[in-house]
Image (cartoon, rainbow, N blue to C red; front, side):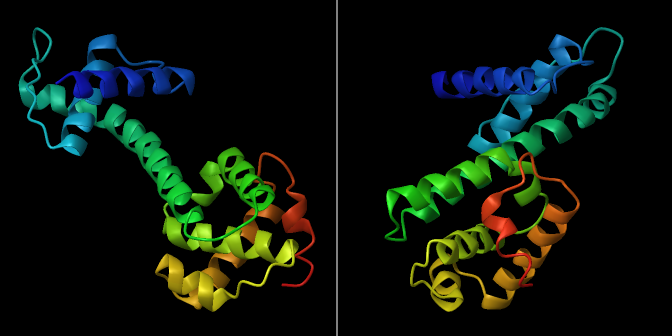
Length: 181
């Protein structure tokens, strides 16, 4: 139960840090976080609705908060998945650091409802090509568990996002490639 409580507190802090807790009563935020964490951990929790509300009415109010929490959780889980993927490739530390910087500063662009493996495949492909490393789309796709077509489609999506100025920084690594596509 200590692990559960620690995860609840961590997620509440993360939501506050990102400014996503504003406008929600403390109890509603706390209960919504508890429900999300319980579902992720497979734990059963009970919530008490505030005075004057039925449990169903209260659950309806929790919906907006849960949607925001789930988005933060999803981005965080995708980032953890991506870090585990980087270890599968024998890349120089400099390349890993550049990939990590690009992904962490632009999470919302890369993990916007698309398959995170495709996003990671496209980013890896672009950065690996920039450094002139010998890693093909096919090798990337096979290792990550996606198709080469998925990598190409996500490269095109990244190109659109880049041109639409959705990135926090104009990534130099992309600038040199998008004149080719």
